[in-house]
Image 1 (cartoon, rainbow, N blue to C red):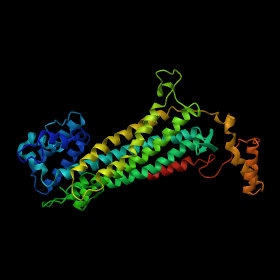
Image 2 (image 1 turned 45 degrees about the horizontal axis):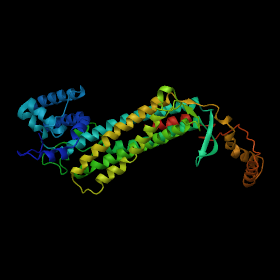
Image 3 (image 1 turned 135 degrees about the vertical axis):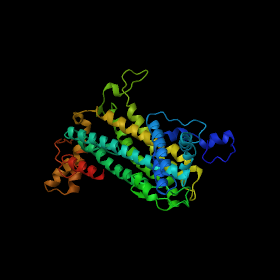
Image 4 (image 1 turned 90 degrees about the vertical axis):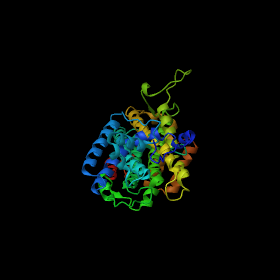
Length: 426
């Protein structure tokens, strides 16, 4: 069944090529299609397009279908093109000619837009919850290990003293920036496109404000052409947000892969969170973090992928836009799984408290010595040369007691301020 069926069939190869894997992907957004149909039906009743008896049975039937979806019993057989055609078929099968009225004053175009906007809003909310859980864990780890020093690096060279408190809370605060991106994507999705039809509105005097309120959108996408042009723009906004979170996770995963190696030996994990080698019995591999790194690196290509699909399309609907679902829907689930796995794993991280006992980290403290000389009245550049000379001669002896007190430094992590910052952005 096709919503555009005019009584003739298309070639089977054309069907397979144009439908693609839409049926599988549409199962993800099926409940939102029914929610949109319920709101649309209520609006049609208000406009007296549906009679009292009709809205009663239509609403009951749609709620029955919605329960079917929630129970996992909803399927889209190969005889249907998409979720929209399956839901309308079920409604017509249940109600006869009354069910055929549901498509009045709308198009598949605004149906799928509504479905995706509602879906994106829910998924962004869930991703923000997962980010917040990871954020809370990082702050707790920062507090727990705030006094454990570790090397800081620039150019992958030993640089200055850092701490596990500084490291953990750095990633926590970075997640706040990612929430800004997610909030922006949410605002773009939180605009009701229903009523835009195929992109040019309807001759029916529909009440778009009513469906906006029924579906919980903050505002309308008023211009009907602009509503259709949101297809692609909304996905790219969300892809940028997913990419931002993925970038943070990828960098953190890379740190862990480095720090788990024997050459660093900064952190470790219980055996059950690592994998082994088929021939080397000593290996404890960070496969989880390598996969998070790889998956998140792939996610960072998503905005560009969506741009290449949609950047040269004219206004109005084009079938190319169907391909956006194939990229964005799996990406959302991938990021959620990476957040869940990262949080699960970091709960069990073990920190090496004796890293700086190794003499190769003595040079971490050269800047501390320069600063002490400056505080004693030596000009900075002269102090720099004095300490540099002791390093060259192999005579440098560090004082490993550090006293950093300014905001955001080793001795003043500002964890409470970072937490308040996150609470505000959420």
